[in-house]
Length: 218
Ligand code: SAH
Image (cartoon, rainbow, N blue to C red; front, side):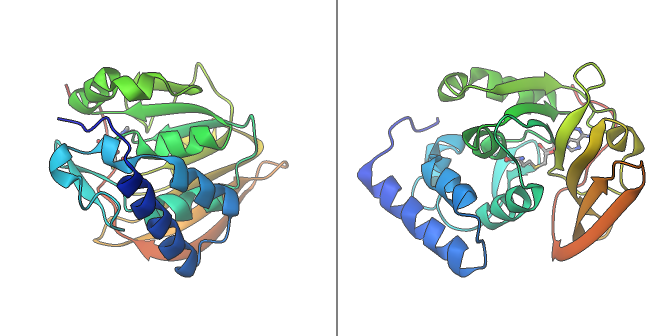
């Protein structure tokens, strides 16, 4: 069962989490404010109620995880979103990251390859009250050609390489943030599709994500 009440205690724990992220080097105050607003315990089973605001990843079923808050903050900060940006997220998972993006005023298109996780987000009542998020069931390697181009793309699973079809769905000047690598650790990369058509790749810290897999799972 999912909790539905956001108590004073949760709000206090959230504030502590934000302070921790700030001391871990997250500097974008808008990103921190968004994390401070999202009731992370709503995204987890009530068994996690006491630990939902610890800075760690948790299982959400189907062998998948809700990302660590530091990772969510780090990726969101690198994406440098602006209000009204059109953003594609690959790997909806719990939808926590999608809500953080939506709170920054962007239009979120999020795609998940696991039917069960996609169905869970459809049944998540609180989520339906969140504006500016559209959910899709499909393979993120393909992106969403019908809705392209996007200002930004965020991949929240470990990509074996920079997916070419996603690069093609970025606007000129568009930016994609993704962890790249097939080993246990991956390197966070920011790819800018420069106006002239070439790609600029910047490399950041190492992280550990679940793998980005091809095809859909029913
Ligand atoms: N953003 C999520 C974290 C998800 S973990 C959150 O905030 O909770 C990574 C997710 O990516 C998993 O749910 C996994 O099923 C999904 N995934 C992996 N490969 C994918 C692909 N090719 N297309 C879409 N989703 C994918």
